[in-house]
Image (cartoon, rainbow, N blue to C red; front, side):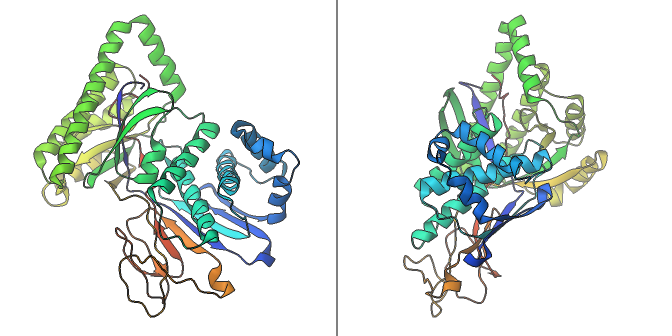
Length: 438
């Protein structure tokens, strides 16, 4: 992938985090991650003991060593029983303790509930989405402890993204991507990796587009694919490089099409969508020639083509196929979509969304009317009201405190809810319009 053009986009499947600070006397941290069947009550003193060790400050400064210590901590205390639970807890404690140290967060009893519409282990960015929600939550909590916090600044968004990337690097042997950027900022990201930790990125704010997301019921092994491509390149480097260069050229053409759609500020230009479909198909054909596809994926793409659509796999190690749909598919292409859906199972119509970056909303003074964000929001002096209660939701709407007049931040919608909620765009489908191994 180094030196090549890559395109990634946020996917309209949502991860939601709800947070509530608990009374000090409870002395508990309550963790609820239903997507991995986890519900834990952890004494806060257990965390205090871990962070009070004599060499803690030395260990936490080395992220790799610190991750090992976190692994020992959750294993010694019997906090997990499955790999998915262990993985989720590693991300949770890694981000909580790193952000607590960097942002001077005072960890107090709290409850956190995180749920997601994303399938686990499906190469749809579920782990990055999970980490982005947690990092944003802990940073927001830290800011609230210092005073009012009326939404994330661009600099704070970059810090969230950096925390997520750190967790990805150390926990997942992160191959350089921009998943953390897509999850934090939303939109479409076009980027080129020239050197490790050096990527030229561009956010393309296109209108939302619709896709059919198809589960191929087969997970490809990323490491095996990398080895396979390396062997192919060793045996016939010239032919392999020709195919990789063609993929790179197609990706650059896709970026130009997306810029055109952005400038038109509409997704109804059928010619642009047809051009994009053609590029998807060409990209998939080149991936097939490189033996980076799979027979299940090829079958789905063939069925899509027979119904008048085009598809491609979503990324390296992918088990999903994206099929681009026209904006009016409900009315004019319903029969075609029905025929496509009737051929295969486990499909879900999803919206390839291009939301705004993370935003947040907070309560106002009781006598105020709903209006645009005020620089001086109300903060009650009562102890109960001072306990932060908020929710992260990467949908395009955010809710406010129940029965209180609210202030609106651009890009959010106000509804009634007992928690303060803010919008996060932390879901990503890595739609790489090139192989990510070149």
